[in-house]
Figure 1 (cartoon, rainbow, N blue to C red):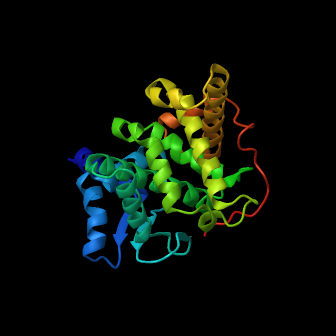
Figure 2 (figure 1 turned 120 degrees about the horizontal axis):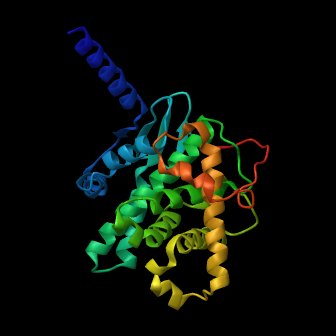
Figure 3 (figure 1 turned 90 degrees about the horizontal axis):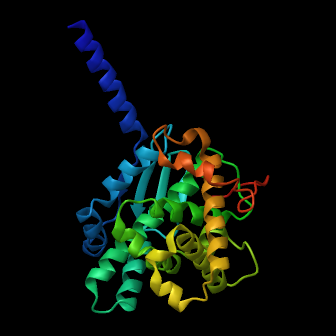
Length: 277
């Protein structure tokens, strides 16, 4: 009996710990139009799957409350551990995809799901950098892009990988770079987004270019360029494995990223103040 009580107590502590490490989801100012934004996400259990995947890889010391709200800016409130994401980002994604894929509702739906998941990984990375004071990178925007892309590439959802680059494009169109990072360079918004898209494409091709034969035909890819993208992929994986360090769960496959390479060529640490809007 005593052993049973102890076992139940241990199980209760484990469940409480697992619950504390999860993300919570909140939705403000919902109306009929906003409900249509969330309905496909709920149908595919996007938030539940995202919670499960985060717990598999990352140990959060305290919960993060993700709030979708009818505002204009994405920002993290460290005092309340709240990540606020404007609902109009989802609206822009759906509108853009309806124009890009007219009369292809299944494709619109699939890319939308993948784009929202990319958005969640992207925002989670920014919260981790801020909340746990992770080492900064020489190129903050590309570093966070790399994390989101790596997380999606490691996803077991084959559909997400099929539409990953379309999802990245939908994300970049819906979330302007300057709203996240301010004026990081003299590039225009279009130039910045083009550079970020090509960087994500390079990581995807470095992972397995055989999955994207249409890109090999459309782009000027040769073996040297593919090898270079594979090196950038390995460097990004190694850099993020080192940055996350003790935050990685013991059973996370991401621990193997460190074995991929040094990562120093991609995201060299720098000493400067991190800003999360």
